[in-house]
Length: 99
Image (cartoon, rainbow, N blue to C red):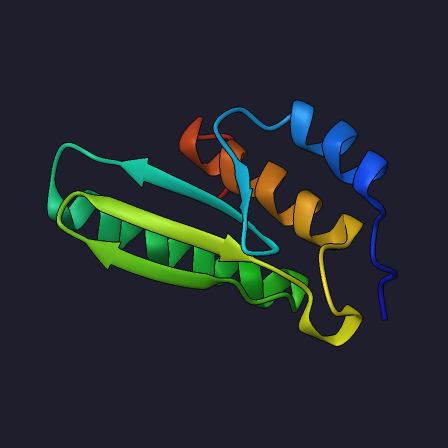
């Protein structure tokens, strides 16, 4: 199990993630797309990444938007694994991960 990061670590890790924020103890970002199916494809790729990492976020697909929420329930809060997943999701938006 990953260990929960403290407030200072959280703030430092969050600095490197553009647009992510902590909402109710979860790491959250809403991604926007030009078309609904682009968001669906992005959510699919997020799911594939989650399976690879065995770390599963909540994904909410809306019209041309996908909300990604991450927390390590077993640790009772945010861990380095949550921030690692967020970094990889950011790479998805830049076309550097997946296909």
